[in-house]
Image (tube, rainbow, N blue to C red; front, side):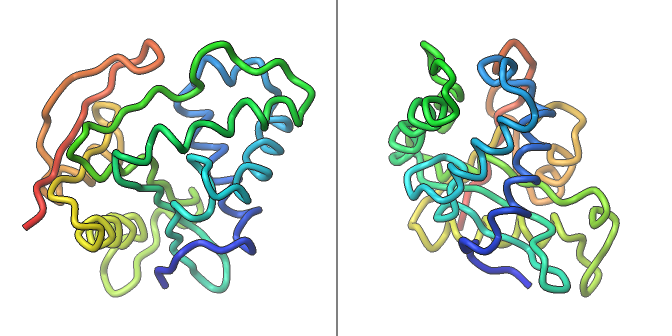
Length: 192
């Protein structure tokens, strides 16, 4: 079942985001231990204006547990979503990074799909012949349409599952980028 994330999903969603951020190897988060990063994400999840806070999240629930999450928002709000990192670092009694933890990625005309991930144990499960990540992608495109956006953008690593999924949905390559010294492809999808 697809639905908006709630406060109750904090544990499950924070773990999903933690694993995705570990895969991304964000330099400014490397000095935190896994426990600290987990705590930061859990606390941040409850913040309304945090990049990985619950208002930006949609979850796929299976048997009462959030097994997948997608984060998306209009490009116009992206800059406001990163103001919480410093406060969260200070709450952990860590010195906040001098530079942005996550650099802005959305182009000005996009609804940006920041993160889409499914728990590994649930990645190979389907409902009505759709994989859980396909349900999340379809839901993200629907959310973008509702917001009035004409284009959905996302950054993926070449060859990743999300890159394959985006290709299946019709996303096209618009640029090649280096994000945190790693190669990414910026994909765009025109909404009708």
